[in-house]
Image 1: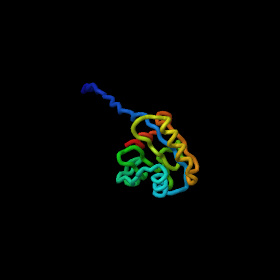
Image 2: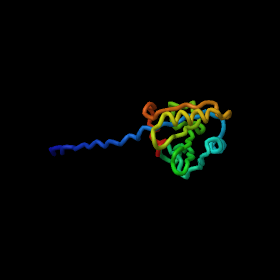
Image 3: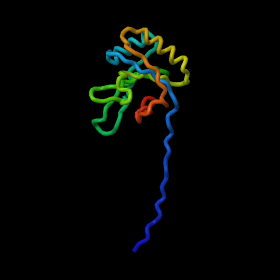
Image 4: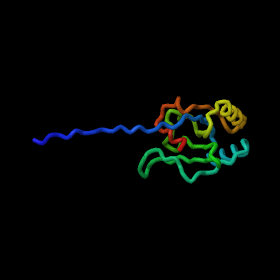
Length: 142
């Protein structure tokens, strides 16, 4: 009988994404219209990104649209498409406005306060990425 060779196992640790803040927006407006409203209201320039967020693998994996500023300061990400959600734990949220760069809660709260003035946006919530337990949360900062 042949002796079994000892199997060496290696554990690969993936780096968790850095903590970031993002806003959850609730609105019935489509993404392109919301982008125009935010651009005017905040004096920014969100533009449709060539790269969508793909949640899953295969040809039928859902694609979520992304709008970004240049340089990268903010990203608007769609949370829901028919039959799918990017972050299931936050399925009542329509869009995420991801704040890239410095983690500053005061600036994020000021941004949320500005967006709340828009009558077409029903609600605005401030989230911290480390407090959301969802495997797709890291896709927001790719």
